[in-house]
Image (spheres, rainbow, N blue to C red):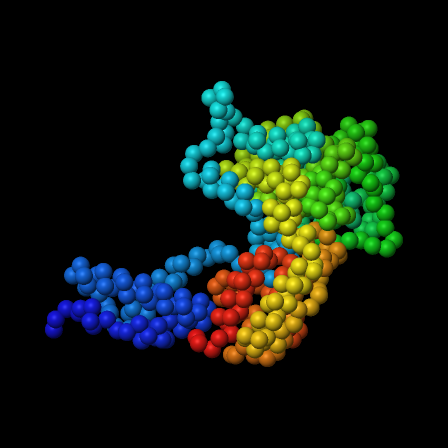
Length: 466
Ligand SMILES: *Cc1c(COP(=O)(O)O)cnc(C)c1O
């Protein structure tokens, strides 16, 4: 028997149509499967040319093509967020501005002056650059940054109140995203939680009565993902902070979603801001970098020089510190935020929030028409409600437009859940909103170029050429 030659290679179609590539054809489409096959064939040709043994039967080549395509699909991949939840924690919260991505790439691929003072040639402070921007943006005396806001809360409680009591209203004992539960955060921090008031009503006298020799701080936590309505009473931050000051205690304000000041981002009203918290007299204001600021995951602490110095001196600071990539992305995002006119167009979250609904309607109608005319789907453009998510503005819907697809769904998908599942497993994965009897593609958190990717993905899921 002679060694196989190029002429013995099977034809492309026999490899592409092999059952071993069935999954790839279904999820990635035939074009992608073809590309994998061509790469597998090129590899085999290379081996044959070099006189190296190569398995060239259709099954081996199809298996090799599938492996090549799998390696191109890392576990962590970009996803089209058609859920209408702008800060979807499961989908990575805020997308970064192009400027932030470029800043990350610049510092990540080489060395940088992360903790190095280029003037003096000595060890420098890690968050100096962003602290400076944060001071300019909010008027705070000092600022620092850690891994996330849960970390910032633990650190603040520990640095200012470990072994002592912190007074919190019962109406503010929040749980955020399942893993951030305030009583548990207290346990980790070593500070003791002293609950006052009731779920719906807490008065200044409740705080005052709870203060004793063990008390170190008063804490306000923004009820970011729920609202207590009806017969309610809460203490304004300024009154709580004034009481803290009068008794020589710290006033800490966990605002969560982190609007820096009014109009940042535009169109969001009713969320507490950093500027308000500081103006009301809080010693420390905490927020998440990847919520309303639209930056990277991090926890920002701002406030008085003394409070920030205490926080930075705590050994836990070292465990929670951020890396150069986070700082680069945050610095670039804050630079954009300084220029409100530019920020609205450049920070993706801010752009999503301000896209006129009429524009979304026009885009939804184009997509619905193509879904109907080209793909034969039962699709319409309808007005709906999107949400900020990520624990912000829980009851404040954002007007939006969706492409609503009703049965029949493309074969073999008999139900909305089955079709949505196939879309999630596609490439790029599409995560739509699923309702009884319908799959909805919300355009509020998609860019115009995402519309094309969405159309492509739906096309691949619809054509019977798999
Ligand atoms: C979101 C939120 C947190 C948790 O922030 P992460 O950055 O997700 O850790 C803590 N407190 C409040 C009030 C929040 O809204």
